[in-house]
Length: 181
Ligand SMILES: CC(C)(COP(=O)(O)OP(=O)(O)OC[C@H]1O[C@@H](n2cnc3c(N)ncnc32)[C@H](O)[C@@H]1OP(=O)(O)O)[C@@H](O)C(=O)NCCC(=O)NCCS
Image: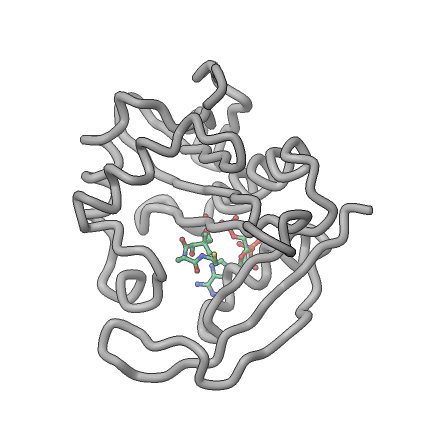
């Protein structure tokens, strides 16, 4: 574990002049992250690997907020979390690779916040010192693909019927990658 402060990393002003602060997830964010998860639309819950409505999962994320190989950045308005992102260095023989998760509250979408938070977590990935960054998503998640392709990521793999959604239906998984060096 390392010391890491929770000072804002960046702020962004969205089209309607609302200021959003991006800062590391902190130990006091449990209730806010749980509320963020509770408000996610059903479609997101269907497609997400982690269950953001499960209190134990939220506890695990909070307790990882100082983990050495993990960076978690939230977008915050007042006390409310409106966006969550994470980058984690993979274990074992892929420990030069990190993978990213990005999630924006439904009511805050299409105003540039996903792009801003993607940039912030991408910068954090560089800070982890990895050589390659990947993001996995279901083929249906077109918005995520658009954001990461704009950042320079390219589709590196498409695994057929590789993921099962919450209804048990098999979905194709895309892997987008960016080579840092
Ligand atoms: C993907 C996600 C983070 C985008 O957040 P956002 O705040 O709406 O992103 P932005 O406003 O920065 O949009 C960036 C671009 O994505 C694309 N995009 C966003 N929403 C889209 C949609 N519903 N359909 C198609 N393209 C979309 C557009 O190209 C958009 O740029 P534009 O508005 O200039 O056209 C959000 O939709 C989300 O949380 N989805 C569920 C989780 C997920 O799919 N995560 C990505 C994989 S980890």
